[in-house]
Length: 132
Image (cartoon, rainbow, N blue to C red; front, side):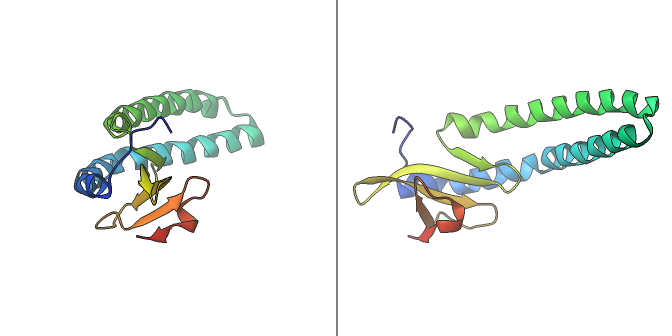
């Protein structure tokens, strides 16, 4: 594994920073979600009646979505640069590459948890995580 390896203490020390980062991202996440829903609505309108006003709105919404997505990516960059694996921006779910009992695993954290208290194998995910 070429990724940075985190000790449990290192991962746990990053939780307050991660929580703050994902809290700050909430308005952008909501904006991206809203724009996606509006684009879907415009596409439905275009399919049903071919309205040119929907087509113009679609272009505006797609540009706004692109801008919001770029802003989200920019704000996530410090998380990724630290070697943290972001599994879900929407759920604020991350993994920390680590070693456990001599093998590579992921330490796992999700929005709202007070600390890093779970881990899972490399080939499993959140649903199969186990307490530390």
